[in-house]
Image 1 (tube, rainbow, N blue to C red):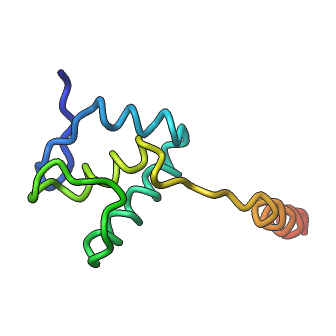
Image 2 (image 1 turned 90 degrees about the horizontal axis):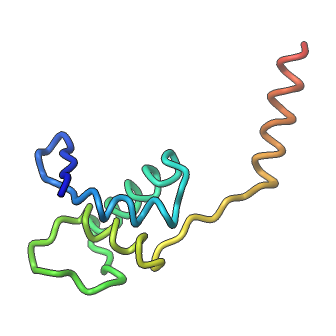
Length: 93
């Protein structure tokens, strides 16, 4: 089994990360979603799933929540289109 290490040195199971990526295939979106959910958990919000242990890492909880479909990302395509129009407007001037 492969293990992925982050700066803190806490291992994250690659299998768990891959399961989350099947739900959120865009890596930047996944990173932002995991980051936001970990901040929420650290701020005291309750997990949407039962932790495997009392000291389970918040990152693992967030990844499991995403992998199990308890946390999803919503994309505002209208906002993306508006931003692209603005960028095109200023790029052409």
